[in-house]
Length: 262
Image (tube, rainbow, N blue to C red; front, top):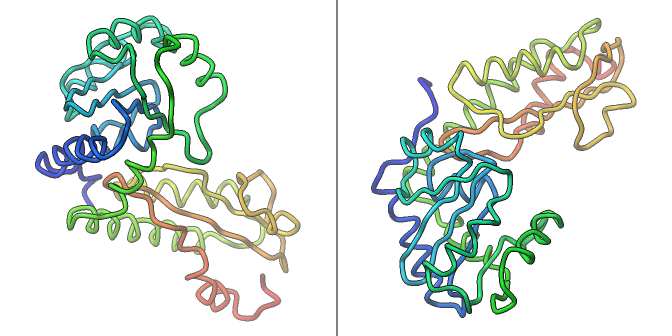
């Protein structure tokens, strides 16, 4: 693959419109987003220091860290971009609420599991007047994202292929004397080179560490006869597949010739 694809303008423009249509079916006046995945889905930009307002009347704007503004303007589907310098733009919220007519409103936040961090919720309660109430607005995005377009299906297929590549490379590097971290390093390098994006922690665990479900690789050296757990995946086109680890159990057994080789 030549690199991660960006959703076409037609596909991307549908997402804010679908969000507005869904808002109109609720009691919410607007939705305020901060999670990287939701913002990337709606704007096309991966950024951890930004906020997106979308109102039931069709208004939408982005709050972006000033240092990231140029990149945002080049890549975002939404074009009304405001900047801030400190980590939390709470000083802008009052002005924006007045501008959007939301001083007395019900605003949806991303409160589904795992929810927003407590310090973020505290900041929002401090920044917004008591005439604004918060409810869980995330089910709107969850429902929209459940139905995939043909373009999104192709991106998922691309993410699976790149993850399979990473798993193949990891398996080829599993041998006594090799560090867990070196196996993950080779797998991630191959996936990045193929156009993938590392979106979450990849893991190789050996021996006693093989029973850990979600962890990071260490400098531990793999020894003969140890059980090996491999969890490798990458993102592509804004999607991330479920880990293909179990698919390769038989292939790993064949590589080691007999079960005692694990």
